Amino acid sequence: MFDCGKGPALVVVQGLHGRWEWMRPALLELASRCRTISYSLSGDIGSGERPDPGQGFGNYLRQLDEVIERTGAAPVALCGVSFGGFVALRYAAMHPERVTSLVLASSPAPGWKPNEQQARWLARPWMSAPAFVATSPMRVWPEVRASFPTWSSRFGFFVRQGLRAARAPMIPSLMAERIKWAQQSDFAADCARIRVPTLVLTGEEPLDRVVPVSSTRSFCNLIRNARCRVLEGTGHLGVLTQPSKFASVVGEFVHAHSH
Image (cartoon, rainbow, N blue to C red; front, top):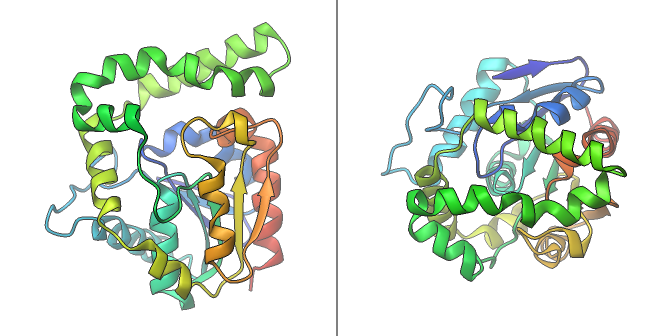
C-alpha cells in the first residue's frame, strides 16, 4: 500500500493492471499536495487478498471500504483511473457520506465495450499477453512523442516504465475477469446517484488509444454538475507521461472540495 503526504485524504483506485507501483510517479507528485493513498486491487500480488467469484465486482468495493477503514482517512476524495473509475464511481454512489469529491480519469463510461482487438485479448488473456506487451510501445507511441520533446526523454520513459512493469507484473486473467465483472454492472444508475463534486479528466482525443475520450466525456452528461478537464499533450497515460500536470489538476480539485 502507498500512504504518504499530508492534508486532505485522496484515495487513488488503480486501473486494470491493478498494481499501485505502476503509478508511483503520479502518487509521489500527489503526495506533495495531499495525503495520498493507493493500493493493489484484490487478487494482485501485494493486495493481501483473493477475490471471491461469488461477489464479482463487489470485491473491489469491499476492498476500498477496508482501505478507508484501515487508514482512518474518511471522509476521502476518490480518484479512479481508467478501470478504477468504475470502482470509485460506485463507491461514491453507495457511500456519499464518506466521499468529499470524485475524479474520473480516462475512465470508460456506462455503455463502453472493448473494441475488437481488446475483446480478442480478453478472450484469451494468457495467450494474448506476449503480443499485448510486444505491441504496447507502438500503441502508446503517439502519446509518448507528444509528451516528451526529445528522443532521449522518450527512451528514458520506456525504460523507467518497463522496469516498473517488470517489478510489478500484471496478471492477464485477472484483468480479463475485471472487465467481465464490470460489464455485468449498471453504472448508469450509479451516475444518477452521485451528489459530490466530480471532475472528469481526459487526455486529447487522438492520443487516447485505450478508452475513447468521447466515452469518458459522457460522464459530464450523466453526473449532475460534473466538470470536464483535458490534459493537453496526453492520452490515456497522463498519470505516467505527465504525472506533475496530472497531480496539479487533481490536487487543486481535491483541496477546493475538502471539508
